[in-house]
Amino acid sequence: MSSKMQSSNNIAQARRTVQQLRVEANIERIKVSKASADLMNYCSEHAKYDPLLMGIPASENPFKDRKPCTIL
Amino acid sequence: MCDQTFLAITFGPCDNCSQNKPLMNIYLKNEPINYCSLCVELMACQGLAKGETTNTLKAESESLKAKLEEERAKLHDVELHQVAEKIEALGQFVMKTRRTLKGHGNKVLCMDWCRDKRRIVSSSQDGKVIVWDAYTTNKEHAVTMPCTWVMACAYAPSGCAVACGGLDNKCSVYPLSLDKNENLAAKKKSVAMHTNYLSSCSFTNSDMQILTSSGDGTCALWDVESGQLLQSFHGHSADVLSLHLAPSETGNTFVSGGCDKKANVWDMRSGQNVQSFETHESDINSVKYYPSGDAFATGSDDATCRLYDLRADREVAIYSRDSIIFGASSVDFSLSGRLLFAGYNDYSINVWDVLKGTRVAILFGHENRVSTVRVSPDGTAFCSGSWDNTLRIWA
Image 1 (cartoon, rainbow over the protein chains, first blue to last red):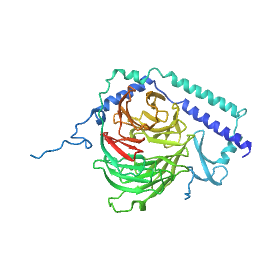
Image 2 (cartoon, one colour; image 1 turned 60 degrees about the vertical axis):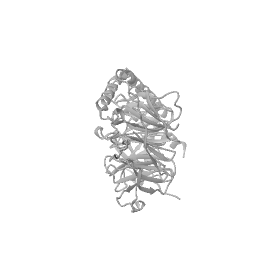
Image 3 (cartoon, rainbow over the protein chains, first blue to last red; image 1 turned 180 degrees about the horizontal axis):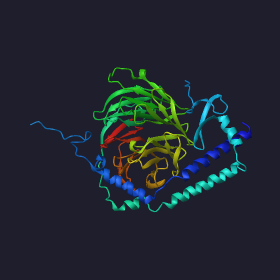
Image 4 (tube, rainbow over the protein chains, first blue to last red; image 1 turned 180 degrees about the vertical axis):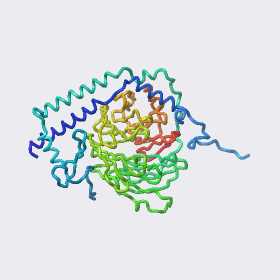
């Protein structure tokens, strides 16, 4: 490869980086406090449906062992 | 044995010189154009505005990076764990191994749950892909791939097929039949072709499309029926190790993480990299979306897991301890997003409180590195696969 191709490669790459950075710099952002509040709200709303968080009785969990039955 | 492999880019007539060559899908002023690589370079040389050299472009990219940091810092008014101080701390967790799936002859590298919440597909280093019934621990199907190190496997949403791939640089789809005697390998369909190993694959919302990531630094979206490349995603500068699709309500995006320490968020329709995060200090091994789709977590070789919020466009939490020095290989959220399960190379699984940033439990049991951790679709249990050749179901 001649050095001209090398430098044009770098230029093409640099242009792409600049274009990508321009796109990224212009996106809409919100404050961390608002984002955190939303994450917390989602957690609280869905906490009751989360079996690993709340724990469900062994009889309803297909993976937990049931107590052995004794035949009288 | 030589496998013919092709670059994950389109092949066809160049818009400029009309020769049939591999094309680079690039965007000029937001218009997609297909030029061959030679024409792209020539165009870059000719299209330079007066005074535009590598130096001015470099200077501009530096100033844009600084501006980006500034914009992000402006909105950093508080930390997530500070906001989370007012919620109750979680109680003690008792999670035990409820099932141990033994049968792989070598390291388990990847696993996935079926949407019926009971079947699991797992793949290992020796090329075996096994479908298990997690309730009974019975093996339902087994396939031997022609390659070793099957690093990626995925269950189709319908439950009727599995996709897997690894060092063969391909992703193959095997339709599962109810007839146990049927030879699965005969029905195999090669879908994706990369120029380096397949690190991760995932079906989109249907059985018809697969998203793959590869050691060649690209991700790609394929049509299963025709094997055609629908979209390719370029932007990582090193191997892409993991990807995860956004939960369906939030639209057509996915996140990928790689050895270049970056986590990128992509738009599936345009192929554009919409957001990029680079705060990890080493390879990112695993990425997973938060259940709401507004954030994602990453696990990395730098022994930390981090949470990035997409709307705030920054890292909002780090999950680490001085006592943890081994890399995190895999992460997954519980159903509500309050818990983060992370498998580490020190054979343990740590459970983190996502909001408060503290560790709530540490689970021992595996006798070698934990390579993969996934929560079941209904959230009742999670499964971990390890280099000790077993999978464990914890509840």
